[in-house]
Image 1 (cartoon, helix red, strand yellow):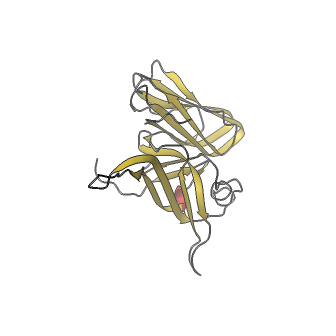
Image 2 (cartoon, one colour):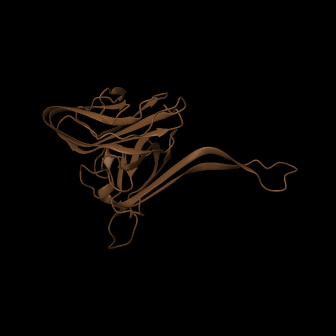
Image 3 (cartoon, one colour):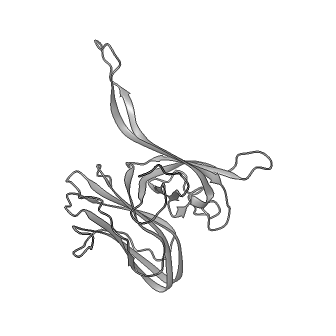
Length: 252
């Protein structure tokens, strides 16, 4: 794969997409480095501690009623300090099978005003991990869905007994009369999903902006995974972003 420019990144936090408001995204994933040097050592010694993750999203505010800045339930203001907010991002676009990342975190700070006279109104939002590792995965469902559909499906891999598959679902818009959205994550041993098994079932969405997090522990020998979206109601539409990935930690 060639070097790629950071031009089409997509950013999701809770039930909101920040992409069209943002021009900068910084993420840091690592471990705490702990000094375990003792008497008799001739050099410093260190060992790995707990895993860490932090993010910073910044750009320009739009206080419209349906944005994360103007909506009273939006993540930018009212969700500061909320535990285990689902944060997902895709660096180079969001077609099925594209690289994506997801984690649950705590929104730590929101800077709603900074600048000088004549400047555009900026924002900055930061957060850290909340009992979650960063999950590297793929997109499996994105965009406005008006009828029942399946994602393309990707050969992500089988799960060993010490691995877990994690899935994040973001619903950023909805419309219609009595709309319903049911999302399942399925696996199979072939890309045609001829004998698919349901692995994760999200709570039914009956018309709300939200995010959900699900997981299934190994061992699972199936190596193909996809999302199945069942939509009901009159004139329904749901705008979704779904990402799947395998992690090594069993985190509830």
